[in-house]
Image (cartoon, rainbow, N blue to C red; front, side, top):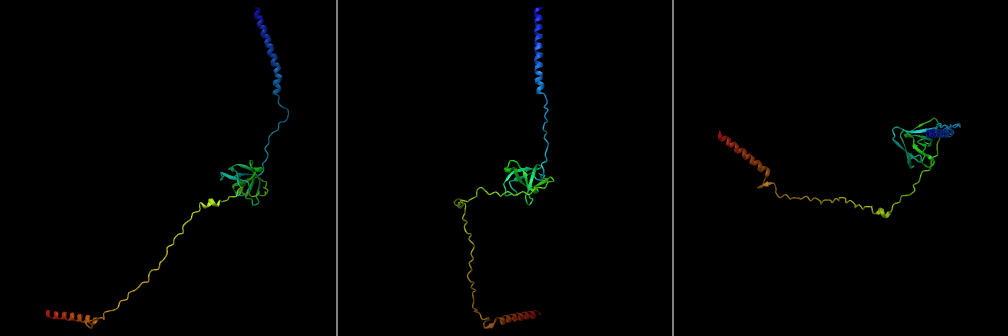
Length: 206
């Protein structure tokens, strides 16, 4: 019986200790859960001003360091991408846009490939100087001479005139007479003799 009472007393003491620990930890936890009374700053969108959008018929366009194809390409912009516009060239063919990642954060796109949105008119921006090539290409004459091929001259056909044509000349030996009688008369006589013979033969048959 004494042991049972002792156990009940010990459980009661442990319960009191547990309640005291919980009561001590409650203010600390409530302090952590307390909401701040200071106003929290809210993020609000700010208008970006004029901007350009790549036309739908262009999958991707080049972004250059200056307003011209002689300037190097520094990146690309894909179709439908919205980029803030900062200015334009004097002729209006190139648009200066905000393009982070390049020196100064500004680059240029070709105006006919994009559509400009926004009511503000773009200011004219002075064009940057044209870049000069860092290395001037030179040709080694010794190396170039190895690739020069000597093409032999084409031999054109030559014309040799033929020898002059020599027409032989024959001397007429005959006199045109048969036995001292002209050839025409001789043939006529033979013909008459034939007719005479034919007539005699005809008369004999009768």
